Length: 461
Ligand code: AMP
Image (tube, rainbow, N blue to C red; front, side, top):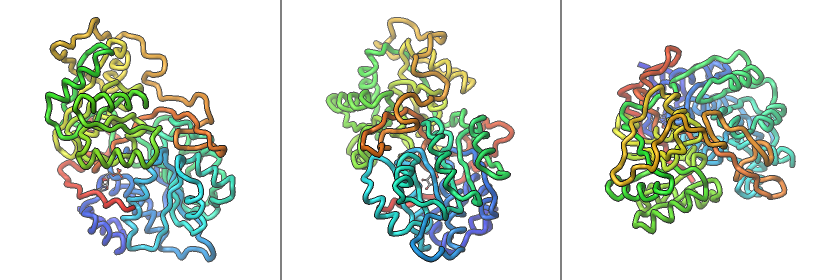
């Protein structure tokens, strides 16, 4: 049996893993760790929830720890580019946990937070820099972030960075990182644009893949309730009031919609908090803490804000609105039914969303059961041939307007906020039960069923 020892990890890392209750490597860790330790470029097909952070984080730390850092102020030797600040924080927390017995400075850089503390951290010296592209460029342009010592470059959730229009920024950053380096790219999909990136930025990458992202765990019961748009909130209240599920994650479409919904649910006696891209990091953390501690039973979130959040397994996910990108359906409902637990996912579908439902069913290659809730039958049927709303569809979003690739929370140097593009999230919890991918294609590695992943690493301040 493969263990972390047999993968060749150092005693300091093994100790940290034992303390974190990671007993067995997940499939992506099994595959990627030896390749990365061997110095290869790795193209990893894995989404969040599979243990991919440790898959690249452990060998990255080991490689850095082996070398004595060059004399003088420590410049980043590893750069991890991520699409969102939540993911940046999460990756940093994980790396700090894994590297707790190594002397490694791990620092984050993202928009929506003060520049000065980030500059101070850069000045103090950094070994591993985890950054969102926009803000990193600001620091590079002002001369505070120097990338000429980078030996290891990780592009995490590369597909999402492309969705968010970060390609130009990524290219600029890549141009400033030494060519002689090891590059690791993780993406949920290996679509043509990811392959093009790999060709451009990587050297003979080894490909590893653990899961298809268009299958739903068999443990998740998911169905849809047709309902008129203007009655969705009443139906939601009805569903939530009838059930006594402890925690419910509700996905909404827009920031304002999420805010309003959380307020209205709270007014209906259902304690709720909202989390979206317009909220500051502190506000998001506060909302998340309220949810995790049970003070708020319901978390209403947009896809963007929900990405990178480490929300433990949930019993129920409700789509107040269908996602604009079909693939996000899988990510959203994958927040429930993890690790063999049973879960439920409900989608409120208005007649106008028939086209979106069609896209999702086409992607899943399966029909979603439609189930009318008594008293909430829509005024007209949900027709699958309905046109797709103008701003959505099965296509990935392309940036439009604003600074290319700019996101909420990534600030322009002048301080003005740039509009944020919506994008899907990756589930963030324990490694996904691989039975979720029982229908994975022949290329996909299928294993891990029955494995009992340990606890999450403790989050450090
Ligand atoms: P990730 O896909 O990196 O976001 O990881 C998902 C979750 O799984 C995180 O909460 C990790 O702490 C946890 N995790 C990662 N690898 C393991 C492992 N080998 N055993 C137990 N938990 C793990």
